[in-house]
Length: 90
Image 1 (spheres, rainbow, N blue to C red):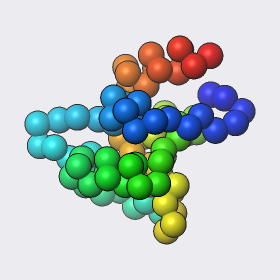
Image 2 (cartoon, helix red, strand yellow):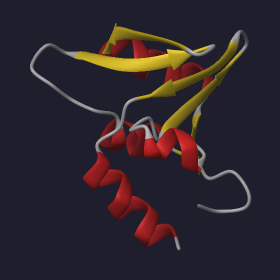
Image 3 (cartoon, rainbow, N blue to C red):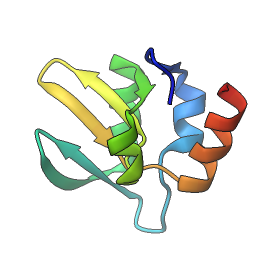
Image 4 (cartoon, one colour):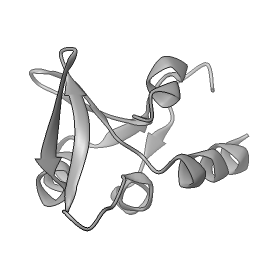
């Protein structure tokens, strides 16, 4: 993980945020976990932007963070795609 935040584009976030048949994504906000529709998560990313999360969140499978007005929203990510992204970023 980098010492400074790695900002990512909407397109990069779209590639990294987890996908499933149900169309939902697991998140943590204020330490509380919940599932949200993926389309809402992507709208939040479009509105606020996104960064690569820290090592602890990445280890929990939530490697994208959205810094919203009411707190950091940690978003479930595809482990394989995030690992590939981080290798390229080094």
